Structures are given as C-alpha cells and as structure tokens.
Image (cartoon, rainbow, N blue to C red; front, top):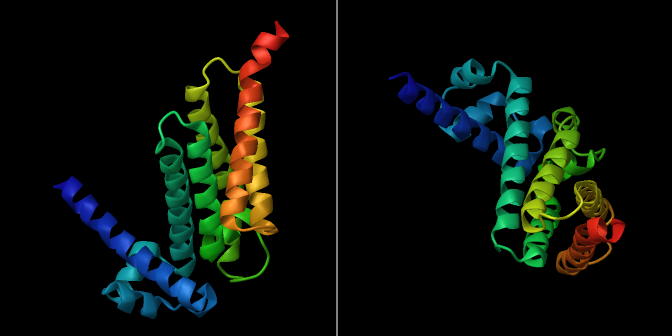
Length: 203
C-alpha cells in the first residue's frame, strides 16, 4: 500500500514539475505563478504548495529533473551504438549540443551563463558542476569498457577534455551542430586511442 501511495505521489510531483517546465520555457521563470502551474497540471494551488512548499522548492525540483534527464540521455546516446566508439561519441556530443541550443534550462546548467531568469538561475547554475561531473563520469565509464587496457589517468583526462570542449562550443558556437559534433567525435576517438597505447609505449 505504501509503495502504491508513494508511486502515486511521485506521478503527481512529476506532473506538476512538467507543467512548471513548460511554463518556464514559454514565459520565463520570473513570470511563472504557482496558480498557473496548478492550472496547467490540473491540480489545486494548495496541492502545489503541499508538494513543494514554495516556488523555490518547485525550482529545486525542476532543476534536479533537468539534470537527471540530461545525464540519462547522454548515457543512452553513448551506449546506443555498441562498440562503435566514434558513433557513440558523436551521438552523445550531438545530443548535448542540440539540447543546449534548444533548451534554455540545460544551457544555463551547462554554462552557468548570466542572463535569462534571475530567480531560477541560482538553482540551475549550482548544478553546473554536478552535471559536468556526471557527464564526465558517464563518458569515462563508457569508454573504459571499450578500451579496457587503456591508461585510466589518460582516459580520465581525455574524457574531461572532450566535455570541456563541448561546453566551450555551447558557449561560443563556431559551426553547425552536426559539423561540431563530427569534429569533436573525431578528436575524442584520437584522444581515447592515444590513451589506449600509453601503457605499451610506457613499457
């Protein structure tokens, strides 16, 4: 019974957060009101307050949802092409670039950019380090399974370098998403391949 109740409450919270996200992208967080969120979610205003306590609590939940979904999508893109390192890297990089271009919330999280919603920004940017760390970890875990004999420190540096380059292209794009993703995927393969031969050359 408790599990059913908890699942029902989680669905309710998800429903409210999705409604808040839709309104935020459409209007900007500063213009979102709890009553409007309640109407969009099909619940009472009091229910929204009961679940999140305040607008700040709702912002916290919204930011957390964006981070979780983004990292899950990156992991899915990486593994979607089996052992094809370049295809996996390209898919993940392209997804990140495209998502940042289309999703102002993700762009704020990834870049900690000033601008946009002043009220929501702190909840997003405090997670920039978290989402970058998790994305880095996802990339490292994935490539380590594909090149198990590689030097771990070199792989870690390669993964971190790729993530930082992706973010730099989000901040200052220089070409189309497809062109950038192809070039960065090629670079990623080069860095990962180099990491794979370090133990042998060191010996």
